[in-house]
Length: 261
Figure 1 (tube, rainbow, N blue to C red):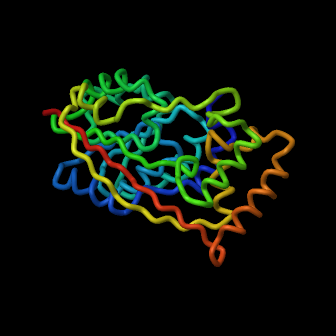
Figure 2 (spheres, rainbow, N blue to C red):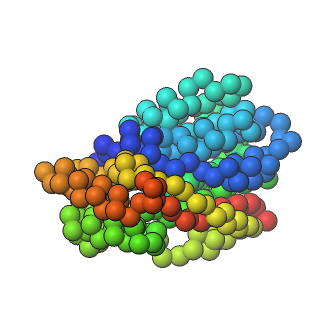
């Protein structure tokens, strides 16, 4: 079963999108190209193509979880002047939609750690334009954030799910132990530029709960018959920490743009 089973509706509503500064940066990267094509791997509910569609004539969305892909289908339906194709499969099994197709940009947002990275990068070497960009981007989560309210929330989650970060019902999270820059530098896309975008996000206690239910570390099934108890305690904790009903997360959104040398 997917690490994200039962989370798709919460993911579609409560996951933060990509910052406007990242949208501008990536749109400028393909400015001037004729009929540019975007390939978004591990797309989730389609947040990246929904943000970038105006810069592309074709978008291929790859997502292995059918619930997530269904949400992406709804989010991307009817985009003007853009052809959208959906692929329900892992990134490692992507097949170009037709002969001669090549992506001008490949995006992987908050999903690279779930993939067999060398396999994916090798696959991309065979289905991208010569001057294509492979973009790996993302930020931390409310699990990794460090502030008084996120520390207290993480401790509460651990009371219910154990000290190790969960990755779905039967797994623990395995953090990647090498910088993505190093992994990209060993691929065909060895010319890597880095951008760090500071982000300040406002949350409410209710939107934090919705976000938690979108994650693999705090999805609803992990709490079993104690879900209602957890939610009551979490809302009380978050309300106590909120300032006029608002909780602020200070994050950094990292964008790696890799190209062939």
